[in-house]
Amino acid sequence: MDVVINGENRNVTPGATLLQVLQELDLDPRAVVVDLNRRIVRRPVLGDVTVSAGDAIEVVNFVGGG
Image (cartoon, rainbow, N blue to C red):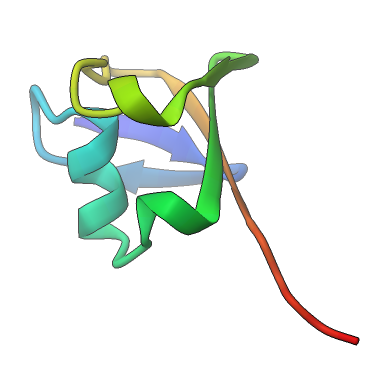
């Protein structure tokens, strides 16, 4: 199923949740913020939100530094 992740067309498993998409991308859900179709999705519900074809997902990583 085709979606857009951070502006790039990607294919993800049909019926996947946002949590599963993060796992496919090898991202730790505790270290990112996820925006689905211009709405922030709270971390506790990432496993409950199913991705649909054509969805736009933005994933922002936290970066530490000094």
